[in-house]
Length: 339
Image 1 (spheres, rainbow, N blue to C red):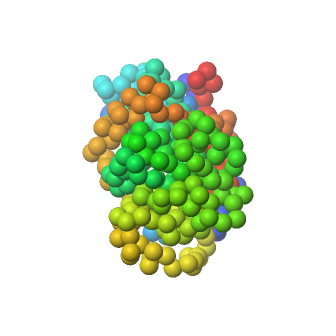
Image 2: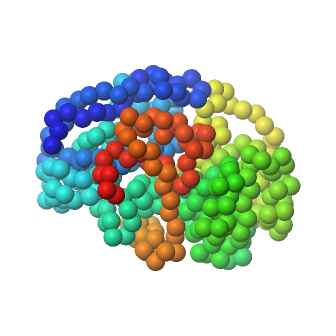
């Protein structure tokens, strides 16, 4: 085992869109696990849009990082030293760890990884936090019913790609917004979406949506915000449900953008608009993980990861989220070249 580990720190707070100057790769000693802890060699680490909020000093639902702090996120890795009876050397686990080559994890806060169900990267996407977000966000907040029309923005991302598939499993018509023809083709040809709209080549979102969803929108799962959401709000049906999961269109804005005032659009349909945080369902994570695992094992749920190789490229992988580089879940491969 190595004596040192490389890990990424927050070098400075971003002003607007982050860039490479916000990150600094440093070397540190590999730590010893205390009682109840595991030392894990990181194979894959996750980059997610919510991390943008943690880079800013402003108040957010996730505690901000301080300048100089090690960046953290979901990881999958191999236990190389255990100080817990729950796991042994060689076990594969997933949990919240450091953007580095090694990470200390509390054994009570990790979950086992079963390569027989899916490859390791899937445990950072469909079988991880994004999958659970899709599961609870759609089923508990969106409350889909057979025959409903479900619209998903950011539909080819880590969360959106799972949302649409679960909606189809519940007998819904599903329409997705995504940012390239490759992505829209993936949604309709591989994931079973009934229609998909390339927002980058569409001039009128409202007109495109009316064509794709001629009977209106019963459930809207919003990962993006901005003009796509403005267009969807005009086509909500009676008793529509809107699950607000993310607003990536606004994450890098230096001031709050003012657009069309759309709240009047929810009065006539008596629509419900609700924000969601997957952490609110933490006591039910086991339920979601079991069901998602069953769907993946039976090929009812397709997963896809965009893998960026090399710890040194983790900042680029994160920045790529804001230009839509990924299809499915964006992960960084740190080790384990065989998986």
